[in-house]
Each structure stands twice: as structure tokens, then as C-alpha cells.
Length: 114
Length: 113
Image (cartoon, rainbow over all chains, first blue to last red; front, top):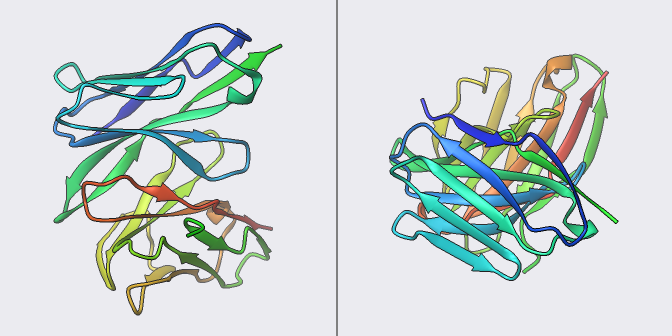
């Protein structure tokens, strides 16, 4: 059974700091990995999708990497801002019954302080 | 296109009542998923559709839960005889094909009192 772990569970940093969020998964037979942002009481906003053939993806101040062999992904946030405060979730796509489904980690709650 | 839309955003119901939620996916997306999220946890897979066919159901989906996608467009999730343990955020997502990015709606927050 695929398990996804995110470390740390919570993180507080001063504005402007660069930071790294970690995601690990137990079964390397994935084909995509996706990072999401979730604000309190809200749905999920897609940040980056990394396909299995890719090693990384970048969008603005965000960079996500994927190492399938070691079962790890990282989300790098450059020059953090208070508006980045949210919970960040990683999810892996696994094949199931001819389709696919996402297995999520429990998230990293980020707080960026002024 | 306004993305994935869910209705209602919030629902408070008494234990034992039935509730129904609706999800409108992004218009050209053929795959639709339902997930459930409790406080402090990541979303958990419930079920998914390809067009109108329901292809997989999680063991989390007891026989009190039923989902439909009658014309391959919007979907409904019904919970019968609600229990307090059903209180959660119910999230809907859609994608175009199996290997493409999933987009989520804002969720329906269910509180069973």
C-alpha cells in the first residue's frame, strides 16, 4: 500500500527566507506527483505537476523535484512571503483498476511571519 | 471556464438525515473524483468516474454512500442516514484523461450534529 509522508508537519519562517518542504513515498511505481496548496477551510489549488519522466518543474518562486528511485520529492519556495502561508500537500498518482487515483500526504502547515 | 464547482459549500444536518452534494467538473474533463478530508489529514480517495462509468470505489465508501454521474457531466454524492463520523470536507476533482493534472473544487464542508 502506498504511503506518503510529509516532513515537517509544521514550519514557521520569517519573510524572505528560502525553504524546502519534503515529501516521501513508499512505492516508486508512480507516474505523476502533484503539489497542492490549501488555505484554511478551502479546497486544493494545484501548484505543480511532475510527470514520472521529469526530474523537476518550476513555476515562479516554486521549484519541485522528483526522485522516483529514492521515493522523494521536494518543494522549494524562494523568497517566502506572508501570502505563502497555507498547508502544502503532495500527492502521488498510482494506477488502479484501469484508472488512477491520488494518494496524499498529511501536509506541511507553513506560516511566513512579517 | 470557472474550474470545478461544488454545491453547497457548507451543509449542517442532523444525524440520520440524508444529504446530497453536487460537483460540476471542468467541461471537457472526462474523469471525476470524490475525496474526503478530515481535520489535519490529507484527502482520502472515495470513488472516481470515467464519463458516466463508476470505475472504482474505496472501502471508505460504505453502503450509505452512493455517487452518480448520469450523463458524464456533473456528479452527485449522496449520504444516507448521516452519522457524526461523516463530518468532513468532501472534495471533487476532475481531469482530462488518466495522466493529466487533477483540478479540485472548493469542497463541501459537512457537519453532522
